Amino acid sequence: MSTSARAVTDDRPPGSRPPWMEQPGPVSQIAKVTVLVILAFIMLFPFVYVIAVSFSSYQDVIGGGLILFPKHPSLEAYRTIFRGGIVTHALLVSIGLTLVGTAVNMVMTVTMAYGLTRSIPGSRFVLGLVLFTLLFSAGLIPNYLLVKQLGMLNSYTSLILPGAISAFNLVVIRQFFMNLPQELLESARIDGANELWILLRVVLPLSKPVLAVIALFYGVAHWNDFFAATLYLNDADKWPIQLVLRQYVLQGSSLAAFITPDPSQAPPPPQTVQMAVVVVATVPILIVYPFLQRYFTQGVLSGAIKG
Image (cartoon, rainbow, N blue to C red):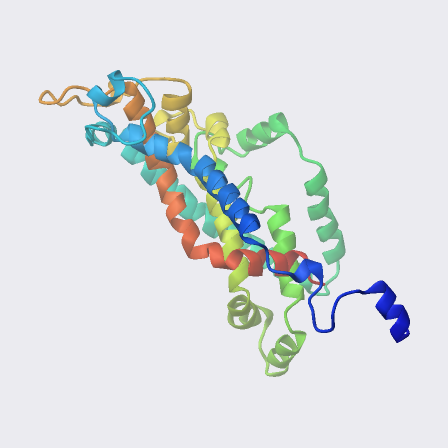
């Protein structure tokens, strides 16, 4: 393009930035900050309300109105739900299911994903079967009949083994493994390392971001799962915390049958007990997120976009 043609199409002085690179003005910055503050308030408001009600006393609740800061804070709702033992037991059950289930998920998903990256007979066919499950599922009744025929009803194995491998998570990990430098793997094979040694000593240390993200996905799924427990667990003593939360908050059941009342204290309002159960069921998994958040972009995008 000649100098005269460039002058016709671009009237900007030499060395100036194009319009899309200009710094936003104060009005634009104020508008962005205002929108972000409003969105943050909308997202944080339910958490603040639930926590405030859980710490409220009888006087705060009967006073009516919106409670965002209790005037007479009290821990009686938390003492009540932990006094009977059912919430404590359900919380321990959920922690155990989350830890054991996530460990089983990661072992089976990682080993299968690594096996599908090797050029072995039948790997393409198995990968096709895995991708097929992303589009079609057996359905509720066949899954229940399968669990029943395997003798896993009313046991914790029914909450772990049927979903031991997620097809989506397996594809993400497999793609991440395929993007690793193959020269490292070949050099390890030349040195005489077998596939298990390569997986444990070479592949897994290089895959910490995607492993952390997938482990978080599995852990959150186990922690929040109540539907499988509703289907397969008939004994209330085996309920996880989410099923207790559903029973006593969504369906409005009472905890009175499971709680030993304190004669020196008036019973807390049902609303504060319900909100306390919500807080107990939500806070543990929220604590884990900040430690793994930095792996999100690096882990998921590297495994899903590259290649």
